[in-house]
Image (tube, rainbow, N blue to C red; front, side, top):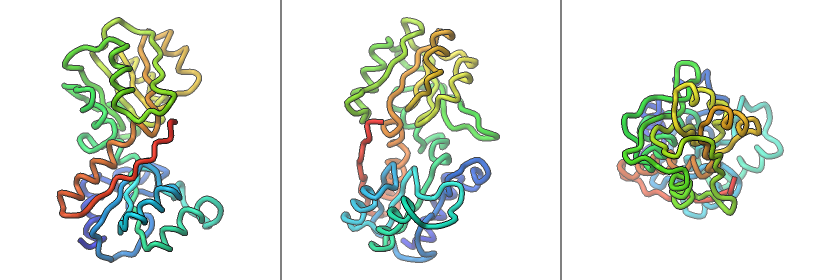
Length: 255
C-alpha cells in the first residue's frame, strides 16, 4: 500500500484534522516521504530510540505511535529529537503519530479499549477538551468491588512492579466508571460532577488524593503506558485488515 494512501486512511478514520488546534503533538505523518510502498507496519506507544530501532529490526516500513517526536513545533533538530529522528532516516523508517485523536476515538481509542476490558455499557463521551472528548464513561455489566477492579487492571495491564495504585474512597460497589487514559488527573472534577463511582486513569497528581477523599470517589491509577496500548494495537488491527504485516513493539515503562 502506498504511504500516502495509508496516511489518508488513518487521518480520515481518526479525524486527525479536528484536533489540529487542540493538540501539541504534530499528528499524522511526522517523518517520511510523501510516497513510498508500505508492506509492514510496526506499532508502539512511544517513539523512543529503543522502539524505533526495534521496529527497524523487524523490517517495518512504517512505525505508528501514540507519542511522537514533534511537540509544539520543531525549531531545530538537536539533542533528544536528533537522537530519535536519526535512526528513522538511517533505517528508511517512516513515522505516523496519533495522540489526542487516538485517545478520543470512540471505538479505536485508548479509553474505548479500556472500557471494553471493563465491559462497560451505555457509554457516553467524557473528558471535554474544547469541542472534543478524550475519554468515556459507562456502566459495568456486573458491578465491581474496589478490590476486584484493581485486581482486573493489575492482571490485564502492563502496570509494572508498582502495580495499580487505588485510592479507595468510594462506595463498596462500583457500577459507573469514567475513563481517561494517560495523564488524566485534570478531568477528575468532571468525573465527580458526572456522579461516577470510580475514575480510572494512567497517572495522577498529588492533589487528586485529597480531592478523591473529599468527593468520596474511587480513583485507580493504572499507569500511563499501561492504559495507552489499546489505541496503537487497534491501528495495527486496521493495518492487518488492509493487508499489511504488523508488529507490536512492546516496551512497558512501569510508569
